[in-house]
Amino acid sequence: MCTGCVQKEYPDRGNTCLENGSYLMNYVGCANCHQRDFVMISNKTTVDEDGEEIVTYLHMCKNCDHIIARHEYTFSVVDDYQEYTMLCMLCGKAEDSISVLPDDPRQTAPLF
Image (cartoon, rainbow, N blue to C red; front, side, top):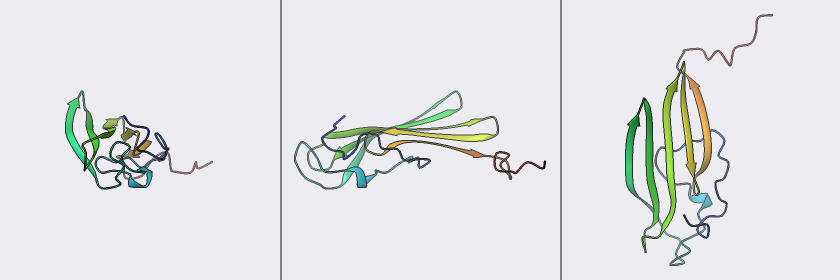
């Protein structure tokens, strides 16, 4: 992927996991054609492997089809939690975990 197109490689995005779209704040412009235009999404695939959904696609320059970055997003249910991850040179890296229960056991205060 292209380090010349991004401001920072794999920025830490905390728990913000994008299933689609682009993090344009990190896009400085195409290193190939030197234009800063829209970022296109291409070759999007969704695969379901053993209960884990994996979405991958390419970020490409609208003007010259230069590949900026490869985006990978995963979703799975582990025990009582929905697990999300994202890894992309443009959009960053992130992880999130959300309880499927009405009250998240990790968020409750101990009684004693």
